Structure formats: structure tokens, C-alpha cells
Amino acid sequence: MKLNEIRDNEGAHKKRMRVGRGPGSGKGKTAGRGVKGQKSRTGVSLLGFEGGQMPLYMRMPKRGFNNPNALKLAEVNLWRLQDAIDAGKLDAKSELKGDALVAAGVIRRVKDGVRLLGTGELKQALNLVVWSATSGAIKAIEAAGGTVVQERIAAEAKAAARVEKRNAAKGKAPAPKAPRGDENKISARAKRTAAKA
Image 1: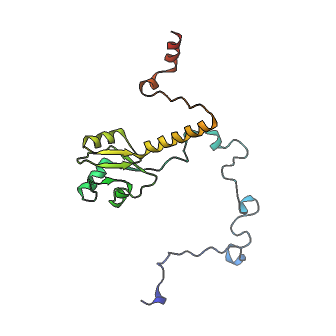
Image 2: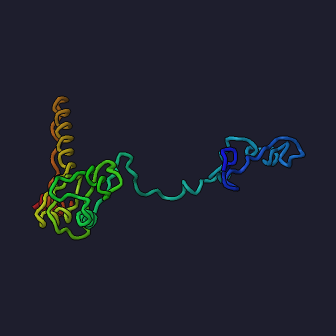
Image 3: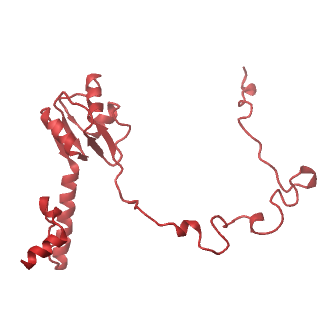
């Protein structure tokens, strides 16, 4: 084979349709767009238009919310970690962060952080530094003699301190902290009844 013989496979490139090049081409005059009107021109905006009545997409109820600021986390289960250790790709004795998991092929990329999930069994003690972890995953790792450091907790504490500092500079009183634990489960009606008694 020579350089001048190199070419793409048959059908790899389709020739562009040449329109508006005379009646003999079969796509002359109106160029296959019909006659007159908005649809014969560029910039058509008829999609979803129902002749003036309320369109379907506006009649249907809207539910849910997509947070544009939500973090994209790489999720890892315990069984994936155990498989990587068994294969000799992860060193169980060293501190494991997102970069180490990527290098071992456990995850493809770190994204905004790593979230640890509790599916599977763990036989060895691991020292993990992740963005967040489920309670089940933390219990399983601590039961195996390992530790989990959640970067999310430190980041939230830092953000709260920043807000308090800004409010103090403006002379605002700190916001009351929400009750935790079982107090959250008390209904508003029960609280009113207790206040009257």
C-alpha cells in the first residue's frame, strides 16, 4: 500500500446535499423546504407551540429540584476496596486517598471527592481519607480496626465559622442551632400541647 492509496472505508463519509443549485439538481428553488412560511427559513421556533393554548409542558405539574451546586462524588463500596487489596493493587498499610484509589483502578476519577458506601465485607484494617462515608461503611471499617477521616465535616465546620465571623462583623446575632436527635422527631402539635400544659 502506498500513501496515495490510503482512503476511508466505503460509506465513512457522506457527501453533503447541495441545495439551491438549479432545478436540474432536484433540490433547487425552495431547496427541499417547501413553500414560504416560518419553516422554510432558519430560526424556526414552533417546537411546543400549540396554536396559543396552554402548552402541555406548562400544564403538567413540576416536581423535584436539581441542585446546580451539588457535588459530583465518586462512589466506592467496601467490596471494591477488598478486591483491590486481594489483587495487590492497594497497600492496606498506607493512608488511602482519592489519588491512590485512581492509581489502583478502583475509581476512574476523583471528581469532587470520594464517597464511601457500606456494601460488601472488609477483612483488613484500612486508613481512609474520603469526602464522606455512610454510617454502615464507617462501622465496618472501624470493626476491622481501621479509621475513616471525612473531609466534609472539616469543610462544613470551616464554612460555619466563616458565616459566624461575617455575621459578627455585621452585628447579627448567631442563628439558633437546630435540635438534634430525638427532639427533631417531636411534632409541632406535641410542642404546642406541651407549651400549654
